[in-house]
Amino acid sequence: KVDGQALLEDLKREFVDADCMEAFMQAASSRRLQAFCFPGALSQGACKALRNVVDSEPLSHSPDSVDSLPEHQRQLPATEAREQLEELIGARETQRLLSLPLEFYRAEQRQRRAEKETGTSCEDETGGDDGDESLYPPIFSLQEAFIRRYSSDSRPFNPFHMDRSHLTVNVALTSSDDHVGGQLLAVQNGRVQVLERAEGEATLHGSDLLHGVSAMSEGVRYSFLLFFSKRQRPAPSNR
Image 1 (tube, rainbow, N blue to C red):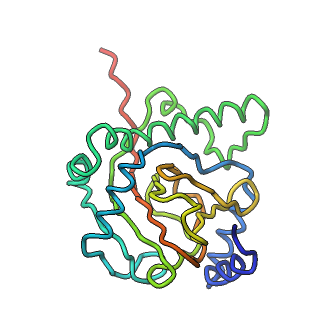
Image 2: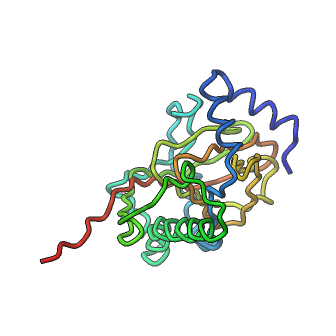
């Protein structure tokens, strides 16, 4: 559960200037679903293996890019991430994770087709006609990956923000029931939503989703974040 007063305090911390307030109002007015959930993206064994990495190795306490608080995370260099993940969780689960961006793309395409069929599509929100992108799916490249640990006495929350990457893959390494507070919040479909997640469930969203993590009260929350860039796949040449 998310306490209403605590949520208001989170919002106050975020709205330190007019740009933050404008971003929130634009996100709150949108009636589109911007975050897609994929249950079972990782097995319980894989989640445990990634939690063990955070608990057994030194963490980065560098200032976070969102709020300048210590990160409390274990970075996986993008150039070595696939190899390290295969050692930690196996090739099959690693491939499952890295295939999620394409699944997100397909889910977005289905949503846009449904909006057009029902007459609820908005050009400003959908970005208009995708043209060749609907025929040739984009190429997603991993740019950054890290495992993060939240607790009331370390990294207690994360204020509302938008990511800089084209696509974010956020995997819950613990269930929402394993801790008090620390809920993933997203401003979509016209309101602030609490995204309750099971262990191993992945939430995918683009850079336009305003989101945050509510304050921790009890327990420990673990998550695995992967940031992807996106570029258009070249259309095959007709020779």
